[in-house]
Structure formats: structure tokens, C-alpha cells
Image 1 (cartoon, one colour):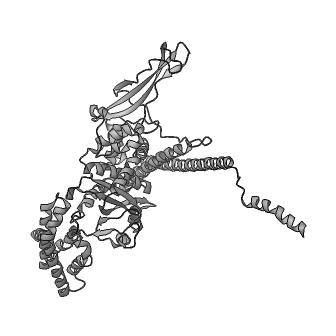
Image 2 (tube, rainbow, N blue to C red):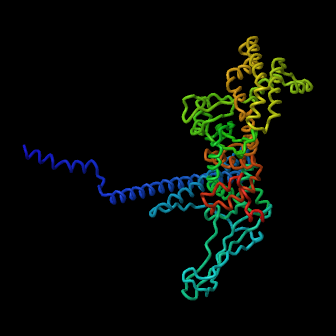
Image 3 (cartoon, rainbow, N blue to C red):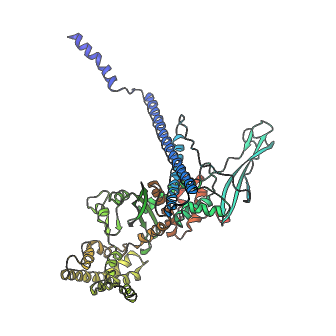
Length: 562
């Protein structure tokens, strides 16, 4: 019996060692954690390399497919207009894939930099011809060191120089800027001294910040796809391939991501925002799917707010309600939006964390439903053309007049403080809203349930709390027009670029649209601002990035000179 107890007692340490292989020594535990962290970094770097490799292969396949299609068209001739459209689609798809590959390259490079064993993937980049010789060259010589940084000696002799050429565009006048870094050798210690290479927006980049800003603004602000820009550049004597331009767009979007995040934080710090969405076609297999671009606008100017306005865009493949819920997961406040029950209803729940979102109705949407049934001018135009005019409903006309009376009051208090706006609304708007509710209820009782006028009345009556919320809060606007104005760039652009090439392309568009529309809201020239930000962001302190936001932006001296 004692022998059995001794055996059991001796087996306990071995069982514990089998269950818990971790060492008891603190230093050994630290070494184990450091080794696990290194392995995690290596795994992350390998995964990033694999993704970059996959993106590079996809871009290469798209490039080869496009070349084959062009060769077939040249050999057999254009069989139909559809073939030209197919080439445009393939070029747009290649553009998005090249931009994806450029972004994944930078992610892989950043992940590999954390490790000592994993080397970043070296992607075979699009071949670029030398810059045309007829472009003027401007030499910017980096000041040479006055003494040897190794030994302090002043006996320096020039050995040669390294020249980095950057393509830049200034007022549509092309030139190649040569940044010269002279080399010197020390006669005392024979060490070679040279100034460090300047920062570039894109690592190993050849495109200057003004050129990149023009590329982004033309694509997203002026709705000019890269293939059309490439054609225009070639006509101006600077031939650049579509792949080369797309590579720069992807890298520039990656570089501007910190500014996008700062704007997102600023928008979601507001107590009241506008929200809306619009359709955007996206490439699918043999067709296009209907994706969505969402916008959230912070604009406190109607109630004399001092915080700068900004617009935040998000992209999603569909219009499911999970997307606005994810966009506003950590936000609570007043949301001014249309009556999209499938997307916003979960936000309005009283038990929602971190807090409920208060719905504020849009009177412009409500008025539009009545206005379409009382459009006297449209009916007169159709009648003059001999067309069949739609019926004008007196009830709809009266509803428009009642709503217009509310809009007249709002015009008089626009730009005043919340307290002043609230006082006027309580005195003038509240009686009109009470009369409107009584009148709408009486009309619904007279009309058939399926009539268009009944639907227009119920649109307001079912959401009456949301429509009357502006009577209790002077910050609330009567309409959601701020979000609709911010989204106006999307329908205008659809006629030019037709569709997004991929989901990644849609996400990239949301980033650049956020930057451009925010700059426009602050009356800042988007292209000039982007050029200055791209010139400064590479070596700008991360703790002072807010200085580059549109409302804090002070143009750099070099940008003014350019």
C-alpha cells in the first residue's frame, strides 16, 4: 500500500508536465512568447506574399486576355460594336486588378519588414518605357554634406551622382524632374558620403504627387476612366500604359488610407448625420451586379455649428441591412435618412448598444410623393406636345402647398443657432404640423386603400414621430438633401465609367470619393489638396496627420510655387 501511494505521488509531476508544457521560468516564458510572435509575423508575411502573388497572377491573366482580344480584333476586324464594349470592360477589369496587386504588394512588404526570414514578393511590374526625351528636365540637387559623416573630415571629392527621374505635370505642361544625389569620397578615411534618397508617395515610384492627384481626381472627380486618360496622355506626347497608371492608383489609395480613417472618425463623432445610398453596377461573370455606395454626411452649418463638414463613403455588394448596421455599429445619435426599413430599422431599436439611433424623417421624400401627383407644369408640357397628360389631384396639390409652408419657415432660420431655430419652430411650424396630421388623417378616410394618394399620406402618418422630431431639436434639418448632394457624383459618373471592375475597385472608389467630396464640402480644391497631401504624407509625423485634413490644410510652400 505505501508503495502504491509512492508511485501515484511520483506520477503527478509527469502528468502536469504532459498537460502544461510551458516553462515555469519567467525569462523562458518571455523567450517563448517572443518566438511565437516571430512565428505569427512570419505566417502573416507569408500569407501577405501569397495574396500578392495571387493578385499579380490575376492581373497577368487579365493582361494576356486583353492582348489576345486586341490581336483577334486586329486580325479579323470588328465584327460588332459589342466587341468594342467588351474591350472596354476588359480594360477596366485589368485596371482594377493591377491596382489590387499594387496594394497587396505594399501590404506584403510591410508584413515582411516585421520579420527577418521572410522576403517580400518581388512582383514583375508593368514595363515602362523611358520618359520621352523631349520633356524638359529640371535638376533638383540635394545639398551635399559639408563633412564626412563617418570621420568628420572635410576633404570630400565628388565621385559621381545618382539621378532619380520623377514624372510630374504642372498646369498641363509635362516635365521630368531629376533629383540628383551627388556622391563624395573622403580623402581621409576613403568612405563614400551621399545624401539620403528623398521620400516618394509610392515606394520606388516614378510619378510625382501632382501627377497622382490629377490621375485620382480625373478618375473619381471628373469621371474619366484610366483608359481614356491614357489616350489623352498619348496625344500629348507622353505614352503611358493602362497597367502603369492603374498600378499608381492602387498605391496612391493605399497611401491615402490614414486620411480616410481620420475623416471617418470625424464624421462618426457627430451627434447628427445624414445617410443615403445609391446603386453602382459592378462586374460579375458575364454580367453586372447591382452593388451599393453608402454615404454618411456630417454638416452642422444649417444650425451654425463650428465643426467642419465631411462625407464618408462605404461600398457593399448588396443593400442588406447588415451594412449600415456595421457602418454605424459604434455610433448613436440622430440619423436623417429616407424610409429604408430593411436597412435602418435595427438601428432604431430602443435596446440597441451602444445606444438607440433616433430617426429624423425627410420632408423632401414626403413632398416628392405628392408632387408627382400634382405636377402641373409636367402635365401642361405633355398636353402641349399632344401627349396624354397625367391626372392632377387637388388633394396632392394642397399637400404640396402645406409642406411648402414649412419649407418657407426653414429658409428663414437656416444658419441660426439651435435655440433660435427651435423657438421659431415651436411658434410657427408646430401648429402647421398639427393641422397637417389632422388633414392627412381625414384624407385617408376618404380615399381607397390602394390609391397612390393614400400611400403618400401613409408614408408620413406611419412615421409621424420621425417627421415631428425636428420640432423638439433645433439641430435637425427638414430634409436629407445633404446626403443626396454628396451622392450626386455617382449617377453623373455612371454614364462615363458604366460600372466598377470589382469589389476592391468599389472599396477604392469609396475611399477616394470620401476625400474628394469632403474637400468640396469645405470649399477646398480637391486636386490641389490631394497633390499637397501626397507630397507630404510620406515623411509627415503620424501624430500630426490631422494637419493634412481639408479643414486644417495649409498649402505647402512648394505647392504654392508649383
